[in-house]
Amino acid sequence: MNKDNKSIIYLDRNENQYGPAPACFDVLNNINPVELYEYSRDFSRGIKSRLTERLASDFGLEEKNVMVGFGGEDILKQAVHCYIHKGDKIMIPAYSWWYYKKISDEVEGVKVEYPIVEGKDTFYYDIEGMLKVYEEQKPKLVLISSPNNPTGNRLEIDQMMYVLDKMKDTVVVLDEAYTLFYNKDNSHLKELVKKYPNLIIIRTFSKYYGLAGIRIGFALMGENHATFNMFSARYLGYNRVSELIGLAALDSVDYYNNMREKMTADMDMFFNEFNNMPGFRAFKSYANFILVEIPVEIKDGLKKYLTERNMIVKFMAEDGLFNHLRITIGTQEQNRLLMSMIKAYLNENKK
Ligand SMILES: Cc1ncc(COP(=O)(O)O)c(C=O)c1O
Image: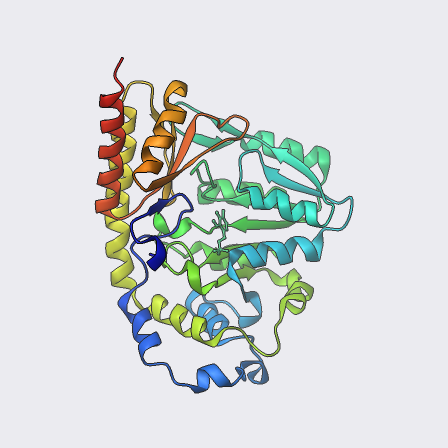
């Protein structure tokens, strides 16, 4: 939490309020000054970073199939800037992180949306609809987000492979920034990278590992991305302190498993509580946030009420999601406080 905003609770940008594992703080407390005053020499060892080396070994890949960047944000931007030129088509989910459209606009790409459909208590990818758009539009690059922000839905691995089989000749960027909150199993990654040479899977230390501030994201990429690998290389290295913190996070499995259990329990709490409140509807989510439709008449009042109490959640304002909140799952204490504030507001404003 920022010292200037001590009392404000931010549940609006999907940051992980539990913060990183203690081992990450040990890195900062014991930093060797050489990490600060010298560049990394990893490049002369034939690798990009000690972090790409470690991730490759964890996932059973070669180092050349792993890339790091300044957050998933940076890798997404680099992929789009490397592969999309003016007039090229880029497929984007109908509901998605606004940034996808922004980076497409930066290179004057042509955005083609594909459907995400609203069900009773879940959003889902309309897979056949998505493939139809793909066949008709013949895009140069496809962006898929699983779990998707802000809808929270994901593609199961068999669905993913079904889609990737059909799109195997096209660059597919699969944004898995939020996947670890619900999916401990990384065993599919090696298979996907080996089987689909045009695939780029993006992950990040920002969300699950509670390290948004160190700005490290990484990509696992198939064999056809040698040029992209070169495009993104930083010969003087990356942020050495961030690399060490990331390595410490990867070693802290128990800390994060414990955190995941608490967050999953609170996700269930939000889902059940909201779905039992008249006029509210929560959608199943596999990320660290939940999308909730609220009665239209309380939107402005509730926003004011929560903001005055230093509780910030995201009030959506886009087509199809106008009466929706996106709530980041915070700590147990923060989640209970938010729930009690919403109930208090409803109580005070009963008709
Ligand atoms: C869907 C999605 N992908 C990627 C990111 C990028 O996060 P970072 O740049 O911190 O890795 C975000 C951040 O909110 C996101 O919502």
